[in-house]
Image (cartoon, rainbow, N blue to C red):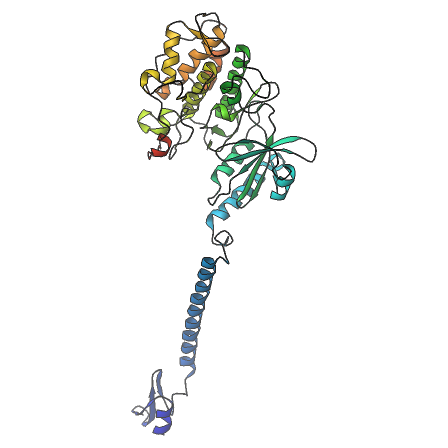
Length: 427
C-alpha cells in the first residue's frame, strides 16, 4: 500500500478518525493513492488550471501584439478598438450628420475628393492647416477643396471647422458644401470664391486676377461686410462662434468683391448665449492680429472683443495698404508700432488716398471713419472696444465722425511670441 502511495507522489500515513491507512498528498489525504481525488478537490484544481492557462494565454497574446506593432505588422491607427481618439472622432463626425439631418454638409470619400480635384491638379492656395485645390462637382459647380495634412491627433481643428460652418448661413460667411473624413484623410469642400483672399488686394497693390486696387468706396463696402459677418457669428447664428483668426488671408472676395469670412480651424463654439467671457487654454491666432488678452490674461478675459481687436488691425492694414508687421517699413520700437504710426498721422490731420499714400487732404471722410473705428477696435482694454454691432453703427452713421480714440499704448507681440508663450488663458 505504501509503495502505491509513494509512487503517486504521496506519503504513507494513518487516519486516526477512521483507524485506516491514509496517503497524505499535496491536495489532501486519500485512502490509497494521490490519484484518488475527491469531487470537491477536482473542481478546485480545474479552476486553478483554467486560471493558469487563461493568464498564460493573455500574456502570450500581449507579447505577440507588441512584437507585431514594433515590427510594423500592426499600426497604432489600425488598432481602433483601443484608440479612444479614433472613437471620439468617428462619433463626432457622425454626430454632425445626425444633428443637421438634410441640412448637413455632404460627406465625400477620399476617392471622391481625388476625382473632384482631378488628382489634386490645380492648387490655388495654402494655409496653416492644409492646401486648397480647385475642383468641380458632378453637377458642374466649381468648388474649393481644402485638404488637411495627415494628423495623428483627434482632428480637433477639422471637426471644429465642420461644426462651426455647418451652423452658419450668411452672405459674408463662406459656404461649406461637404467634407471628407477617413481617419487621417480629411478635406473640406467649399464654394469657390473667385477673387481669392483679401491680402492679394492689400499687399500686391491690386489683385493679379483683377489687376485693380481697392478704391475707398469698395474698401468701405468690404469693411462693412466683414463687420456684418462677425456680428452674425457673435450674435446672429444659432450657436455663438468666436473666430480667433481674423486676418486678410482668411477673408475671401467673390466676383462682386463681396467679402466672406473663412478658415474656422481656430474658432470656438459657445454653448451659451453669453460670449462676454469664454474659457480658453493656450494662444490662438496670427501674430499681428492677436488681442492682448489672448496672449496674456493680465489684460482681461478672452471674449468676442478679441475678434473685434483682430478686425481693427485688419482694417488698419487695408487702409495703409501694407502688412502691420512689415519689417521693411517699420523699425522696432513703440514709436513705430503700426497703430501708433497711423494714429500719429491722424493727429496731424493726414489721411490716405485709395492707393495707400499719405496726403494732406482730409476730404475723404470715408477713409478717416474707417481709421477712427479701427483704432477704437484695437484698444488695449477689451471693455473699451465696441461690439461688432456698434462697429457697424459707427461705420454706417452718416452724421459726425466717431469720437477721437485714445492712443494705443501696447506694442505688438513679436513673431516668436506665438511659440514662446506658455500662458494658459482661462476665465
